[in-house]
Length: 179
Image 1 (cartoon, rainbow, N blue to C red):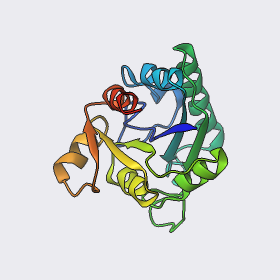
Image 2: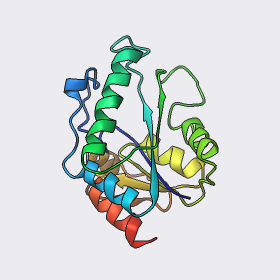
Image 3: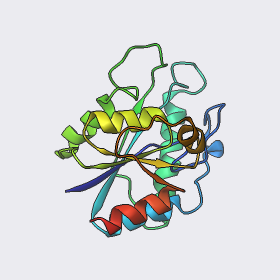
């Protein structure tokens, strides 16, 4: 089975330093949903692994997070795309959990649920945490320059083998060209 793992905020949708707290605040990055549909059309399953510390911080609750994800799933479906699974970490950075990226817990859980060896799987994100989690599981870190991506790139210190692209659409082009 072919799999790609995506971060959410800054990769699929426009990011906000004040968190995405309502479905109305969730806005797709142009071309991102169509890129997901292209992956699906080429036989890829798509998983999302997203840190959502706004839950622990009390900025949104599970009902709101579910509504945001329902909007995202429907928006992908409207352009012929499908997101197979969404994993999220509700904890803040100091919780010490196994799921909050850069810890690899969510990615490991995705691999186990879908019965996929994560070695070589494209993991697309915009932050150092996303890239570190990808490297930890043997995935290929793809950095997009949307969201926090430009800051991440300028800060340097990327995991070995990180590939850099303007946005999700360009990263998907590379994934498809290499398959």
